[in-house]
Image (cartoon, rainbow, N blue to C red; front, top):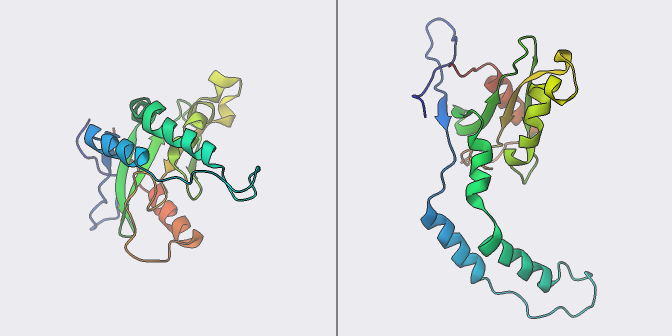
Length: 185
């Protein structure tokens, strides 16, 4: 992990916002506690109907809980975003997590993508290769993007807001500010 970096430019007389490198490392104790809590969840013994008219059937929920407690490989999930350049920076009072991948094509267009609610940038990771290096995926250099995958406030590895009002316009303004910042190195 490198030292915190600053944006490449800032208006004269102002302090540039800090952009810090980031990696995902969830402590084993937290994963153990999560597994314990999932395993201890009280589930209904049975549904009163034979179909899903009352919602997700308990057998499905039990199988899902078993998977999250015993079958999900969190370390493999950590490897995927950690294979890419990740950063955090404060915008509008919230620490924002983002992945920033420059295209090998110098004339690539900048593009910010974000996930929905609920969600995470993890669901966008499969787009990185085709968008940043389209020639490796059957496209042309004109199809290339310099890509930023931004985590919404309160989701993934972004900080939690302390006030209401993170509607689409406010998020758009935050992403415009994020677009003006560039990690160095």
